[in-house]
Length: 132
Image (tube, rainbow, N blue to C red; front, side, top):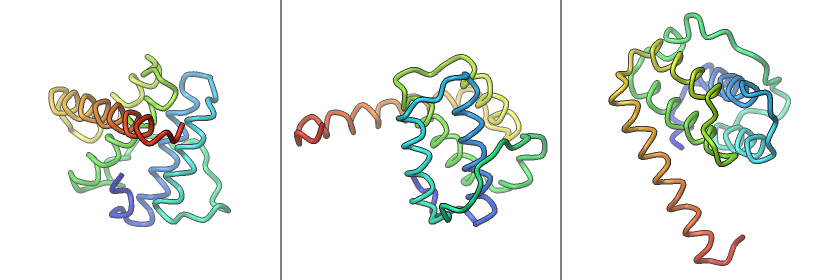
């Protein structure tokens, strides 16, 4: 969501951050992998791009603008809910990123709750359209 507004370097970093979140709980869920591929398509990042671990030290320099930081956090929250649960390991990692991005806990909680409501609406739409 809104990932196409990121620069190419930010898109690569976003994919790597998403990878970090996916592997943080030690479980590889097909829904998370599917969402990672959806991110890749939305950002028009080549399938040849190797997604690997990204050290978050200095991540705020890759995303200097607040808008880009918030887009990353929203999408990482969306990814965390892909398997149906916001695992503690995922939450801790995203919280570290939140702090590096200088986003308040209150604002982050608003983003997280909004994202959860959005996912619930999407699921409701899928059910209404008999797409499941």
